[in-house]
Length: 180
Image 1 (tube, rainbow, N blue to C red):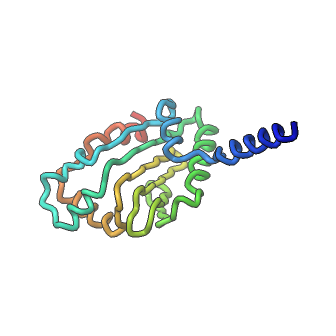
Image 2 (cartoon, rainbow, N blue to C red; image 1 turned 90 degrees about the vertical axis):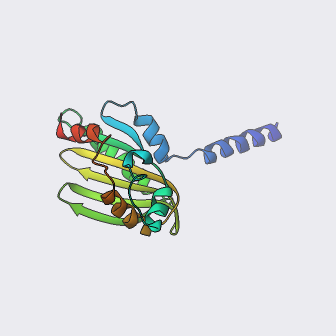
Image 3 (spheres, rainbow, N blue to C red; image 1 turned 180 degrees about the vertical axis):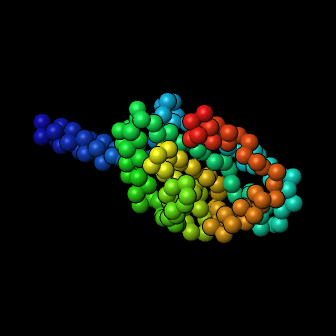
């Protein structure tokens, strides 16, 4: 009988310890993709129109290290202020996880932003951009890639300037925050 109790307690301990109380960012995206307060979409790298641009070898390497961008945006309204505060706290709790390293914080005319990454400094697998505007809401952008390098982001921005990308596919996001 004691052996059965010990086995049950051990089993319960294993189950409890394997369950994480903190939701992953991927789980957060999936859980909120159907929530009417959120706009959720993926942007494939092909949408950036960089295949046709004349890129340096460094810019090509930067572009090739990208897989896609996931965007999840919460639009704040008078009716969902409490939900906005709850969801913003949830995102901050997820990003406070030791898996994410803070790269920088910014204050802009649009609001506050923080950039974090997951992976090694010279081989980043995921970059998270969290932007918050107290009046309009927040946006969470996951830049997914393979062994991205922080220096690649500067190269990528320069490459985007050479492309004919003018925001196609992002219209829903602009309309989302403009109230259209």
